Image (tube, rainbow, N blue to C red; front, side):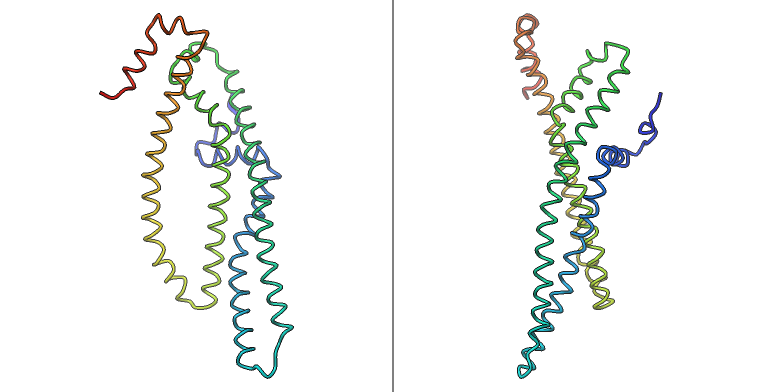
Length: 242
């Protein structure tokens, strides 16, 4: 019997739905905070521009100081910086909570899947064992990385959109100049990141495979069988480059 999750074929969408179902209240709260954090830098730019105008006006008209306007602008500027730091701390705590609940949900879904296994040969399959152990070993760090990267990228997208709005309010040409200046860098950075990610994934897969094989090879209860069937020797011969 298929669950609603099984009907979602798109892996990123399926992962996000699973994340949302793990902790809907905290995900919504974290998304709202990310929205505020993404907008705050653009608001800070506007306040900074206003502060520069006030200071320049005071310097030009030094016979009549507008201290009240200067102090109110400085107070607003400091308040924005304060809330930015506070929101970042709250978001960090929420990300940890969401990642923990996400890991718990993954374990639950995995347990449900395993209860549907009818053929016991499934657990004797080397590839299945490696995948299950890889999931077990990465149940904390991988969900935390996913949650952190998700909200980090969302924050950057919101910040970029709000920055375009600020630049457009100053000059209609500034957003296009920024696009032409940043798009080539984005493509180059993305290409390098993909190459780096592929290399890291291969190394992690090799490390996890070796860890799982060694875990079986160094198991006290299986040492006699391992020596009898030359497990360590065969493992060394297969994993050592010629």
